[in-house]
Image 1 (cartoon, rainbow, N blue to C red):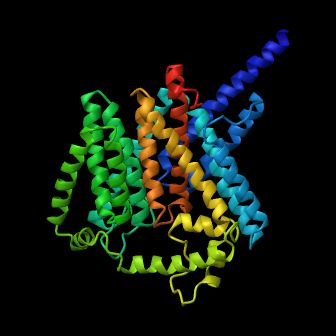
Image 2: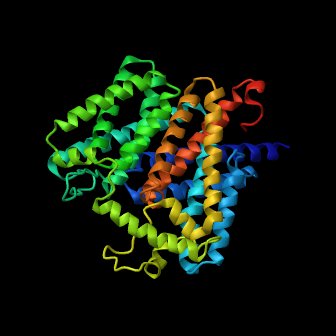
Image 3: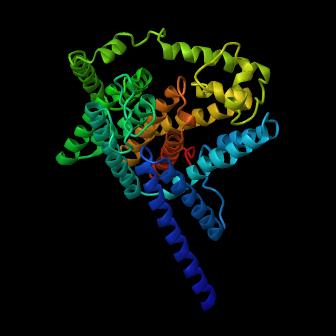
Length: 420
């Protein structure tokens, strides 16, 4: 009896240690998301390994979220596509080292971010990291070189900070801004609100300087969505748009002014290039419409489906939905869209029924950031960028975690048992 009690005590102690270690690794991933691919790769793999060991000690299954069936369906279809692939090695590597890693990290985050203090710490760490990137972006604007990775800006005046492209930096900024807005809403101290407001101005300025039209558009859409829940935000948004647009038209940056004027013009080189890639992608989809050509093999097969000399190397599809359909077929795309549909359904449902605490405001930020990412996937490679792809799965996990915890605090007749 004493021996069994001691063994249980030692096991619980080990589980507690693993839980704290996983939490620290998640914090490391959040901080280094925009900074170091190597660090977030290493930290996420370590977090997954410790999480698996923890589950073995607990003798328990993965946490039960409302997204499980959709995620497992997508995982099963991608697994099947490996064996139907045009290149088994590429597909197996993509499944094991990218998709499976992201999904296991998703469950580790859902189970670990299980109280308000941990959720708040995520906000603080995300903001410190974003502030560093914002300062780096402004520094790069004036010196033409960022100080984190010593990357020079492009031949055109667009900032990238530590990212490879302005569009990637724009996507990151547009995903962080909803968290900044939510923090401003639930922070009560004047100093905290002033700090968050200053961070918003910094990140919004950098977003404009990326000159990423797609990022501008999806950021606007996400803020409009947030204004449905935070009514004063609509007035604030109008003021920001007026002041921001006026300021940048008076800035003397002719390239930025031209991009603002031609916001919806699709005759520039980048837009034409995407159109040519999408034509090849559609041919790829039609060649194997149901299960696709194999997970991760778009670039491997690209040359087979273009009727023109493409002189810019082998590209991604620059539309993640088309690339998913090309690689895993319309069945794979449907299962991926099901994940998003379930996430948005339960997220909006919680926003309607939840009480306005830290979980509610975090859910609002998470859903809004997911709107940004889903919109950005229409015309860029966001899902296939390691940093942004990890941010996407982390955002889904954070949203699932706070909805689960927040729903447990609701009266039974309000939760209706639908939010687990």
